[in-house]
Length: 375
Image (tube, rainbow, N blue to C red; front, side):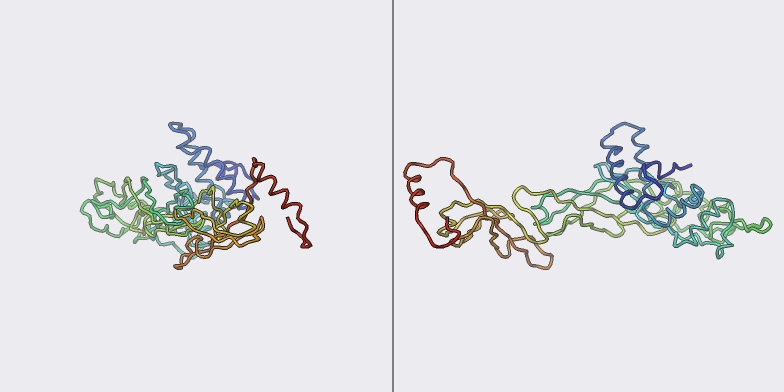
């Protein structure tokens, strides 16, 4: 029996989606295997947290659980069915991000009734045992702002289910597609009547698969998939925004029973830079300039994010706090252009002055002027 997902995440039954996500992220970081090496209890808690979140993040699954409890997933389509825990070896997470074949409330009710031992005929007839999609995989990477400027390739190493190469995913010893089960006609379920109710149960000859494998593949034991260490190169485009999610279609886990493979997702986080602040596609940097240059004007040299030297003209009378715009030296905008760079002007106040400098400043300060705002 699965544990109550609300209790696992430590949230109330009326918790909002935001509260559920916050609780999940806090617990998944606490019990992550990389932070608790060799701790079996932490590993189990990590799986429980993932299973609980898989139910509560999905409105349909959550509604089914609220109404029927564990029985809503007794048919094997719940979050806990076949959940393999964390497949990554580098601190990443693995979620079922929507794989499966439950298409609406009618499917939820059918699955719940099947969990109680009742057939689905009362809800529109038997559901075909269509191949389910493989699970999606999710990883997260933190990159520097400079990496976001130039773009980079991120390599992910992890273990996941892939199509068995010996049987080509069919699960048969000869590598050919399995024959349709003659007992259930490929539906995966058989039907009998008990009084008013039509009872639907998994086919005893094919175990609900819908196909009959007489001799199983020795490598995958008839599942059509095997676990394998994988390396995936994900290209992060130049100019990517913080919080962006990249998708690689069909690069997730392989599916049993001939379904499509899941997708691979990579969440991008950008580490704050010490010099540049990003605002959309623009960059902002603070620059202290001496009083003489601000008053008289001149040129200064700055280092840009792309490791180049840039000469910038400072107009005479530039004020502290003013922002000077340098066009085309911001972040790539994804359309072949660039944002702008803004210099936020500060001033350098010398701590030590020579007698000559002190005299010059005193004379300057003593000059009268009719203009308001004069130094």
